[in-house]
Length: 253
Image 1 (tube, rainbow, N blue to C red):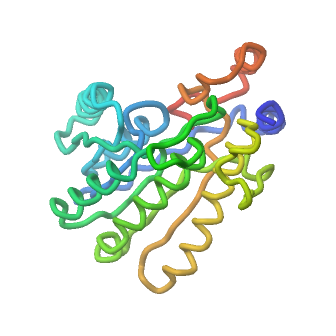
Image 2: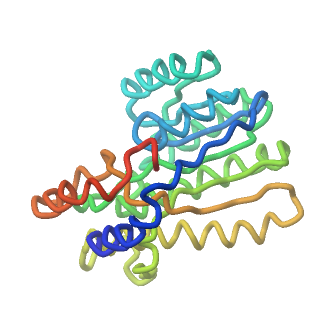
């Protein structure tokens, strides 16, 4: 399934090879942005760009050591001090609630929430609350986080909620009879299920938020070479190395 996704990206290579990368000079001074998983990969690159354009960045991540390193890098890149790192473990609802409580208490507004963090095709495991890890982190965790921050986001309108999904959602289905994959576990199917949940959640939320000034989006960043691929098996890792010229790096993603 992952290989199909990559070949789909390669089919677009010819017409995008010489296309200039998208960029924006729009100033974001006074905007507050929470980005989950901004300690690495496309989350960190997003944080760097938004910080450079004036936004206050809150890095929400599980690994505080990497988060502090990313915070330093983002500050140096942007030339701004408005960056901080906060602990958030999306596999633990206690951590999610503590993070949201701190944001609601300390931040007068939240203009942009970017649900970026995730895991992909990992070995079977469960979150602290008993969810299969991919559906638990990629969807359930972000669902709860968004719900807990929604009132603050509404008060900050115009505002937006962005969830990083994947074209893998097109091969997914929601197995309500075994959503935690306890009967059988296919790590690619579990990933696709979680990404489909992202899309369905975004569409439902968009309808509920009509007229509030809050817009919500899900997106596919492309096939991007990041640490997210660390759980691929040997043959998959080899294939992705061969396909590297046709994939994106974190900045392009």
